[in-house]
Length: 481
Image 1 (cartoon, rainbow, N blue to C red):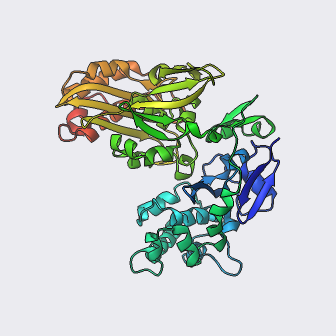
Image 2: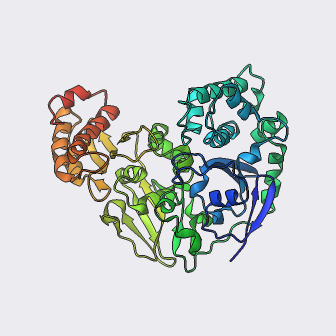
Image 3: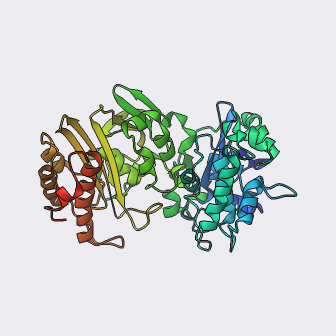
């Protein structure tokens, strides 16, 4: 077994641990017990760490839940636990804000919050808004405080780094990490990490004889986490050719290992889907989106996969490879039955191809779940509608949670094509859609409730995208929803 070499806080680690073992289990075994085990499903954020990788000479950090991250992926990375943010004789800036505002009660979740809040200061893509702060802790749950005291600590942090605050200059600094070190907001060793990581060997792909293929691991570890550490695994994220997004031939070619976060931040994606930020707020949490991959979400084949529903509605195609030959299959034909795919065991989904649109391409995503965020959908739906004037040229509407597979409403699309945007058109589409779905009752809702949501989400697509033509009342008043 090859050794794994990485930096853990301020210490170089070389270990022969199983590559499938969780980072959470490793750090706690090594007495870094500030990282807490809570749900072990990525849901609570008590085990949050930062993982840094070298990017254009600097280290970019992301908060992730260590209960879903394999050790094998840490080769050449920098792992930061709560202990790695501590100062020897004083509280850190973030810790002090939490103490001052009484942001902790039982304290079990506090290390995860502090790690996420510190990352908020480190993120060069962030904004100085309370909404951005709340998003940074969207994967951290607290059952004691009611969040108000934590949010007040966040307000203090924002004030300190905003214009007129004592640390305002760091937000505009070219090197954010250096600026934070200069102000003693994070430990000094962070400035040494680019050089340190550059000296560590890059990971080498090795999937021979693998029993498990791990991408983000956000679902695989939940389902089969007890088996993985003792099994032979392939770390798919050691294949950089399966990452990234490029625009070519009027399409986006998206590596299957592209994370939800990377997808949402891509400029070409944002041109196609201008409200991508809003949609991400409905999908998982920041910590999960930093790990979950598009390919993994598709191959998991959940009938209610959020990104699967969106990509299905975009008219995507999948590129599969067995290492020798490649083939392309339309995503709408990929799902054959519950958890049954048009994919041979030796094949991997390597890329996703999304056709680009025009100025008359309109995309929307809707989701209903018991919680607003970080929850499984009762029903989710994506829509892509291309217009010529007020006439629908083509329409793709997907539904998750209403069939055994992620469902593309093909007959509904056929009905819509060639019709003008109107309340009558939408009402007709609702009737066709009801004949295409076959929901069942489960813990997330009854079959009748899900049928109601099919109507409501289709209406939402049209009123959100074409509010200048339609109102909810115009459509809903004569519909059967």
